[in-house]
Length: 81
Image 1 (cartoon, rainbow, N blue to C red):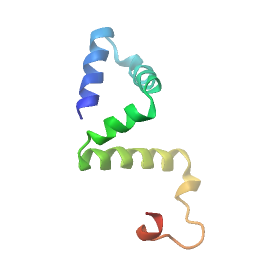
Image 2 (spheres, rainbow, N blue to C red):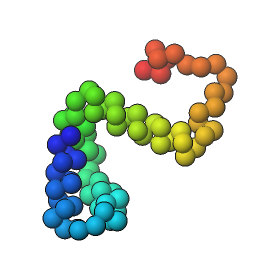
Image 3 (cartoon, rainbow, N blue to C red):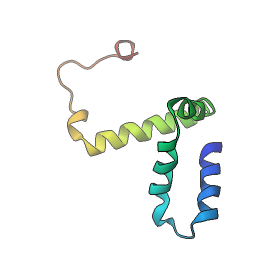
Image 4 (cartoon, rainbow, N blue to C red):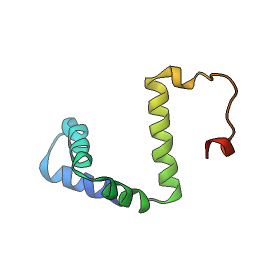
């Protein structure tokens, strides 16, 4: 992902240690508007989008296990989309 590569290079120019990488990344993202964020997503390949969405969903499910517990009937992909 081009955006991740650019962020990595920018981070390495300013910091020698990895201890600030989360703060750095979230600070950059916070400065971007919705359109900027969508532009980054539009530059991603299908595989990159799958990785991003998969990571987000797994993170949400791991931090809030109640989201993973089905409540009632399971929805089909057609119902979700």
